[in-house]
Length: 142
Image 1 (tube, rainbow, N blue to C red):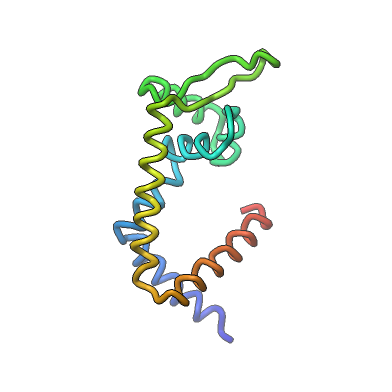
Image 2: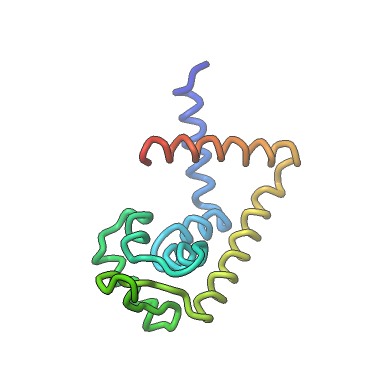
């Protein structure tokens, strides 16, 4: 098999997908304040700013700025960890939780829209292959 030729075809298709409205919305959710909100929402209990910056691959200064902005918007709270006063714990407010829920629903609607153009078999296969690639990329250190 000529994987290079297949890669060229895939690259062209990826470019088209990136321009698609539902795909754009999903991609945007993987960055910035939206990512931070979703990250906090998916964890049971408070998180550390360093955990968010590590997951996003950004500096602690950038995550501090994002958290400042989110706090001003009333979406997160920060407090000193009573067990280790050197650590700051970040949690979503009720407004932040509601925004995370709404965003998750929007993303799921977009993904549903994307998958619905495929047959059931193709949709399952696409999700299966994407899972394989995601696990591989995680193992490669992204």
